[in-house]
Image (cartoon, rainbow, N blue to C red):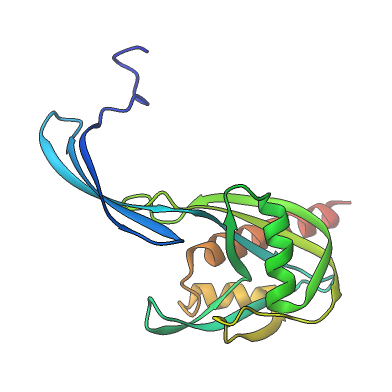
Length: 193
């Protein structure tokens, strides 16, 4: 590799100690040499699952949000349906399961919407979000850790909740804004015909 390559990893790990581990995450303390050659430390949270998120959009451009109290935030949070996907599972299969569990919805058309790193300064958490359309309503079946409220609303209102700070979840913000842009592009194309 060329020494002048701007994409070269100039970090060196000198020592790594695992300080915490559970079924969802592990936390390690790292002694490092930073890109300027100086010693330093890094704390890294490694996730054992892939985050999956779903923007479910019906034929009238309504979407679905899930509200729940988030223990880590000590606050109530409105989000797109989302959950964890074991790394050995297909993320699309996990997304279909999460959508059904949290909303009761079954989608007959799926598209990959985006890939995201949620907080890449301290964690390797990686997420994949999907657009789900051609919806059919079934029965929700949330996990016992989920005390959920479901809200159906126009996509424009969900985007307004992002813009006013009522939605702060990173997967939700990125996904809703991208779907809004895609919907606007499709409407503009239709107007040009």
